[in-house]
Image (cartoon, rainbow over all chains, first blue to last red; front, side, top):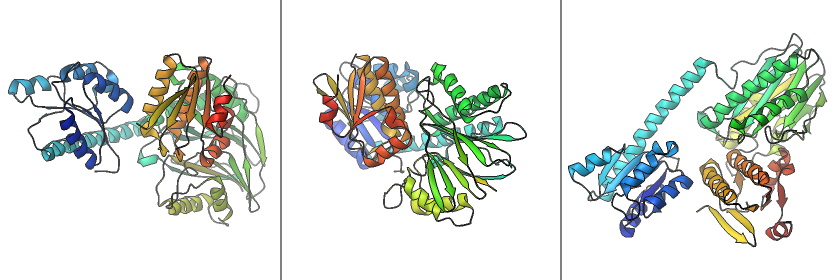
Length: 376
Length: 112
């Protein structure tokens, strides 16, 4: 089987048959949970969230047809691929089964090998459909301009900004970053991380990037120098009030830089601390603000960092420090600091990217984002 | 089942019996906790002692659970957070949100 372990709910009242099928499925790499009728099956589907459901038809209490109808009635479960595995092999039985929007109808007299082959083939074809769908969404997202990570970093006088971003499993996810030119003299750098993965998190990343941009524009109306804390507070107030995203939590780093000025302004919300590289040493700059949307007053504060020429500030999400090397040890904050210290005069982001990829064998467990803001 | 439950006095202990607590188990974890909250339970301990790694989706489930429990005037305490997890809680200020205990006995004693 592929690397991912597929989850199957098997609903079968005959314990001997269930044991045999479960054994064969597990031997082939599937994770299987078994229920003895449709009612138990329904509970398992709710809690286990399977990729596929295999069910008998004739069972006490809640039979297979009723079970299927219960699933179809719930939007969340209606689209989970469903297979009837039954002794009922008459033409009318099979047609009745297919009327319930199932993907496959397998007669129990088939050999275990044939049953397994049919299930594997079904999963393979569903994966292909999913991949095609994802590719379509990617194309649509790109054409909408709904990118959560810009391709190009804008040039900004007095600074050199570089970035490394790699989505988890090559699917856009919860990390987002943005560079907003506020006026001729100021730019805001935004690095956020939705607590989640892949498309579900990506959707909210798009929404949050929009919230941050709106907050920056809104703050501009005040006709005074915008601070990172003001932006953070405005974003937090908006998302805290928004019930649609009340269960979505986000970490956010906001850095405001001014042309040719030595001082940059930072505010963080539950984010990974910034790393300030200066004269061969690295200082950890920690913000105490809480996750966005968690409480109305996130207790955010402005932090100012003085940058000398060639100083660098690294803004990052947790992707790098939560990844593991080939021995299974985490690349924690201290190891990242050691990598930064070892970089010498070469391009930091390239060095960090290559070092971490070598340590992890290019296997990350989350979206990975790091930006360097260098005073030049 | 990777998510186990145990009751001591009126405190529900939810044990994440997972070496790697990730997106794969987030839904079942959240479902079980929210079901218990809806039943009216207010005192919870999450035992994360078996977890060598907790990813951001499960962290999000912890935060959601905390929010729901506090809304119902309940209490949530965490035990068994390993050094790696603890350092992540510290780095991201989540340690300010959660009450984290070294062991179960202390957490149980601290319920008001």
